[in-house]
Length: 420
Image 1 (cartoon, rainbow, N blue to C red):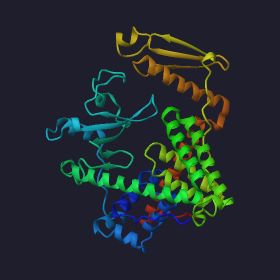
Image 2: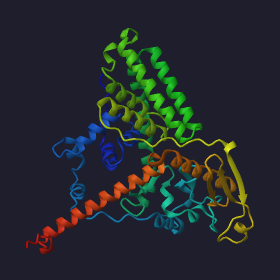
Image 3: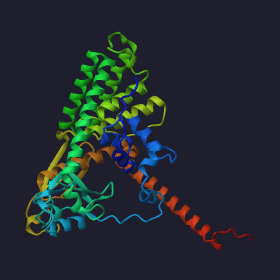
Image 4: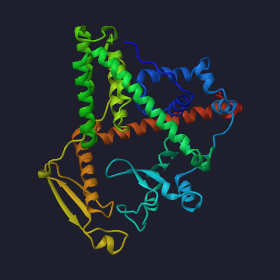
């Protein structure tokens, strides 16, 4: 079955190049494209002899930046952006919001710029004053992201500037809405082709699976969701295999995927167009893992699921807090202490003024500690430490290599071998 081709616009190429260092599954989810289509297009953008490369870098300034002929502009920190929004009279603060990482919910949340502080310990009354800067992930003007830490995007101080962004917001929103309408049409076309290939009965089952996984994503925690996503991909792949083995029920047998790799790529096209922006990359990551397994490529090992805790095995006590904060801390029993009776593991938490949030954080810490107790070197904490250590070694190796090249370029005598 040939994939449904959609021409790549210049704006999509720019977005693809901007996100090129992110996982393929994340890029596909952002752009609403299939996994193989994203990989193929990115390869063309990296090829100087391709038309896609020439179109993207036809601007001499952009080309010179890619060749590192000029220094990149300094990335303005979130504190400076927030300060400008607060004190610049031309910027209506009610139109801005912040995206921040919430440690309790373990996800990125959005809050209005002027939202009060209701959960973070300290004297700050506004959330932007209470949040540590490293937890601020992005800043939005209405629905448009104007500052993003991970993408190093700054439209406030850097070109085109926040004034131009505000002036052109209506045009941006129209373009965004038009792109969403295009994605809806493409979803209908992809759905029609899949229905023709799988047959009405199997396609209905696939739709029901997709509906169930979206419902599951709204009520389950991350670890349970990962199990459901893995099951979803395997069941969907089984439907494609059934269509291949018994093509008589297909409305268009010529459109049936010829192997599992093709089937998974077709599945990625429909998943990339799902309405849930948080669920798409999760499913696409699992689809990509399945595609690598089919190809016989090595798949990065995933950390084991955190062990569940039976509340009957936990002794929970509340004690008075300690440390700075005066009577708000020292005269309230907001410190949570958990004892896991079967293992004797104990954790405490007094991170926030909210007792309920401290209870959630304490249970998460106990699960991590129990995971380390049961799984040892394969626990989530140990794997994260191993990954950080490997990253540090690679960084040191690159640094030594750069220093060696610099010495050789400067003909430094100290870099030459001294013979006795």
